[in-house]
Image 1 (tube, rainbow, N blue to C red):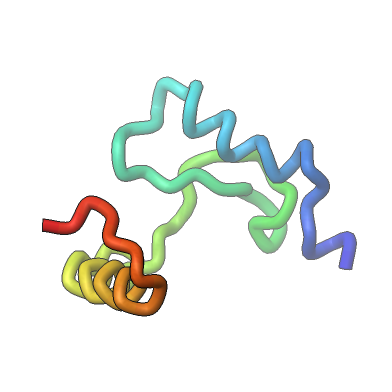
Image 2 (image 1 turned 45 degrees about the horizontal axis):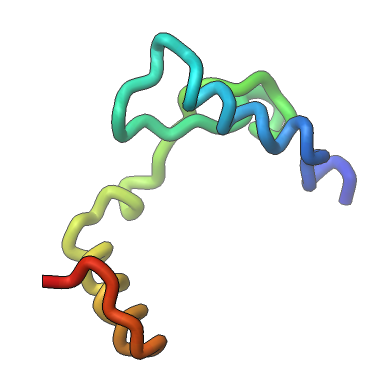
Amino acid sequence: MRLLIPNPANAAKPIIHAACADDVSGGDYCGPRGFLEIGGKPGKARVNPIAKDVDLGKRLWALSESMTGIRYLSE
């Protein structure tokens, strides 16, 4: 399992890269780059197209509010 789960220091690298790198813009996704994209150097990573589906995101948000009974930032 150690090969699949990064230690805390490696897990933090993409977050630090996203916050500090000059080549990162709003909407970019940063993650590990390298062998199986686990534990590699941080950089821009591929985003699954479903993660950018605005309509699906709205439906998920509404479902989450419905299931939890908490409304947050809803119109």
